[in-house]
Length: 404
Image 1 (cartoon, one colour):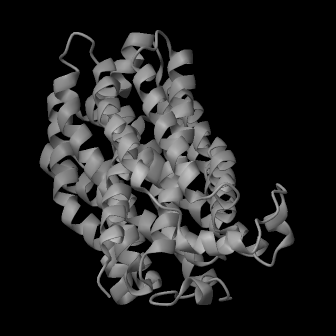
Image 2 (cartoon, rainbow, N blue to C red; image 1 turned 135 degrees about the horizontal axis):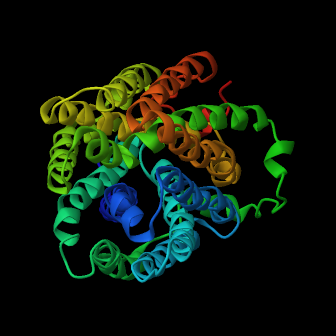
Image 3 (cartoon, rainbow, N blue to C red; image 1 turned 90 degrees about the vertical axis):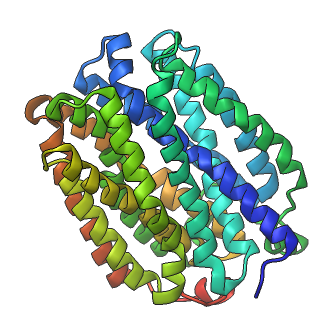
């Protein structure tokens, strides 16, 4: 079934909005050595800084769950506006504490926008194309990472240095904040609201039949984040400190790797609609582990760039798999709240803990061994997907929400 004109506009809007999730994620990875130099931080300090910022991804829970009460549209509006403001003021930070606070808040809004965008994608598009839509929207974040990797080496040479990354990144968001005025509430939420709003009780999902599913998804998210969160954010530190790369070489490798991975990342969602979520996970999660291991153990710019390409594909492509499952396995009245619990409040504890652990280990072993060992985590997550989760390809949300 072809997309309607509104669905096409919505598809474009959500893709552009999600672009900045990738930009922001890559920005921190690219400027981390420069931040360490400016703020006189050790490797372990860098791990704590990243972890503190990532607390915002947990606190995003408070916003995401409100999408089941306020509606998807109001929450998306708040998140886009909030991220724009926090991103700009991050460039004005004078020390590590205010930078961490501003970026923590930016992550609250950014991850809130990302989560609600995935709910929109699940609820507003045809069942047989849901994987493709979720995949392309997520791939837009990878495109944001490419753009960031390409422009950061240039921005670092400006008079304001790393601060320019946040000034430049905030400007286009103003356009997105204006464009969201044409956004409608999702039809599924509107229909649900006609029957009354769900309870606002904090623990309501734990009194539902879906509590076990939330724990399953949280464990899978957490294991995945142990690897994917550290794999890209510390690669520049590894390449500069342990392989002797310059800023320009890192920018070149990251840009080439991200660009080469793009066709595969954009196809990942379509792959889930063709071969299914479970077999797609085999390919994607296995590739993730192989890419991350190579990116932190190989030598030479060519081999490292090749491994980084595989790693960027994997760390980007695991998200459509888990986004699809997290949207499909819960009913409309619990969809955002369940996403908030499984991803933000529980799953992202690993998102915070992993950089601390890796930074601590890196002080003693270097970045290579510290990050390479995390490559086993996606394989464990893959085993849990096959053991615990059903195949949901091509089914309606009402069907998938009732599957055991």
